[in-house]
Image (cartoon, rainbow, N blue to C red):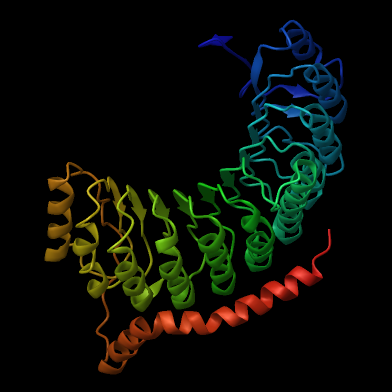
Length: 399
């Protein structure tokens, strides 16, 4: 079909089971009927490809020189573990030399670390790619390591081929790697090998990866130091606690273009919430969306939100459900009033699952205040530990 003079070939969601080359004959025939220079997007998601079918379709794609978007999400349902890397390798053969390729979408393919190996070649050899979508692939720690080293190696190859002064991948602006069980170790590999070579990264989504505070610290430090153009950051459902909160507070000033921040279900805690809110209050004037659900923020933290909103008239999404203050408290009315005044009366979510506030002892209150006041100093003290980790990982990583 033709949309605004862009040719898109799609079989999205047709649940085709293409195992043999014969099964894929109709797809091959239709692709061959398209002029090589006109096809810009393929959409195969929601079908399933065996090795021989993938090879046949890939062969038909090899002369499609104008291909920009390859949607290969959810194309291996029901396939065996040893089939998937071979089928994926066939598609890589077809895509690796496409100089206009921008978007590669491999979401919802449970290929694990074995699938990361074939796409390693794509990342290293095709440096026109701007957007990597690798959500819900079961990469695990080893798969995350392979992706990180692939991007680092691609940057080195880019430097060598262009006689550049630094090893970077200037084209990549979007990475989506949620639900991959990356955990702390893979997050550290990405932080120390991948993010430093991505100076133009604008969107990073890594929710639900089981990353612990020590991984969050390294990740946020790397993004703060190397990725000043960040606009969208989604780390939902990883674990921050106080160390992660402090690392986030320290990194925030590095991202003046930040529009979307999702740190819901990240357990920043009472003290961590205060550190975060105080840090973001005078900055981030372009912020449009803040997801801050289920973070154990108490009333004292919530009372900092009106001041935070004062210089952020574009906030149109503010989710605070699941925190530890009364939804009927006056501060909620104040927050709603500010949002309504800014033309975003429906920005605040329904506060239906608020936790019951506990009566804190004086000792607990004093401890929280001390954590908030001394947090940045403690973060600075942790920098040496993070640098040591970077040196250790950098010297010990192998592809």
